[in-house]
Amino acid sequence: MSDDHADHNHHHNHEHHDHHEHAHGHDHDQGLAGMLRYLRHAPEMWSSEVNTAVVHRLAPTAGETVMDIGAGMGAGTMVAAKTNCTVVAIEPTPYMRRILGLRRLITRTKDQVYIVDGTAESTTVADGSIDAAWAVNTMHHWTSLNDGIRELARVLAPGGRILLVDESFDDPEHPDYERFGAKFGDEHEHHFHTVDPDAVGAALSDAGLTVTFAGHDRVAGRPSVVLEAVAPR
Image (tube, rainbow, N blue to C red):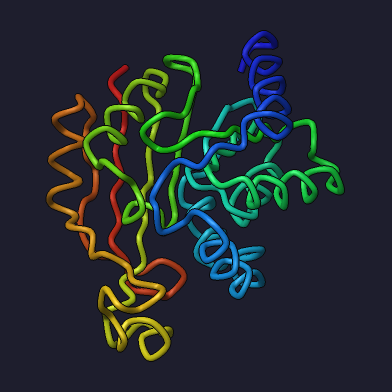
């Protein structure tokens, strides 16, 4: 990431923290109900084996600029920052940005993390500026899958890579099946819409990306929908 771009993101972050805490993204995540729902699951959002496994699988390296889509409290962002890369943490909800902002301030890698008020469909990041991007358990929250994929294709640098993972909570082999999956349904507060890997793979291909994996896999031992793709060089 160039100094100009880093400065822009840093300014953008403070601007939105102070003045533009507008609600956007999936309606399920907004308001007091969304905040309370997330706070009940704060420990697993603070540190997550799945996020750690995803970052390790994507393998960011020193000097790269990477993007965490739906960064939440920073479970993946903070793991990536330890590799001496620059992390752009995209997060649409104000209370999550506040928590991540406080967490960033108490870490040694705070200068490598930029928090941005954005969504998968509108990251506000410059064209071709991202070497690698990932999303964990956020695809089902995107308001438009196709718009999110097109945005990813726009921001990826030549040869940039993507790793998108949504856990399959409706799989009886998932360790949290009884907690979430067995109650699967629109009436359940933690409803996860099932992501179709074929549909996501097709959207990635239509956006000009090369899909290297689209299907079901285990991430940190958990059954998940996994998409991997790379941008043309």
